[in-house]
Image 1 (tube, one colour):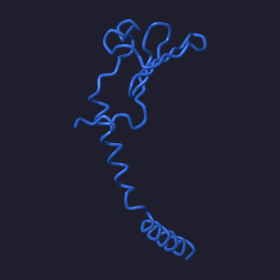
Image 2 (cartoon, one colour):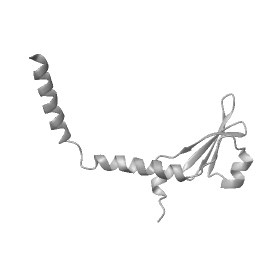
Image 3 (spheres, helix red, strand yellow):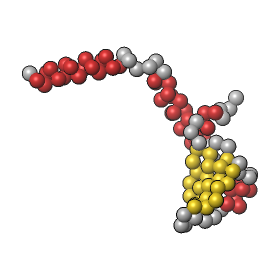
Image 4 (tube, one colour):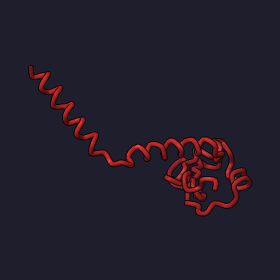
Length: 106
């Protein structure tokens, strides 16, 4: 009997909660999916490239940050993404939040 009451109560609460979701909640999921698709089409610096290769291919960064830690990790910021280096080699590239959708082809 207790299980039936709990099941009924939880289904009522769940049903009531679904009606309270904001109308745009599902659009956020669509934007995230589109951002992932666009990010997949981008060609940011690959792991293992040297700083000189990144500079030659993508130009001067908008900002550079001094090395931190041991081994030294350096960050270069470009418009929409940042590149992290260990010594002279790319460790990884990080896209800035929302930057992909801001740059949709017109």
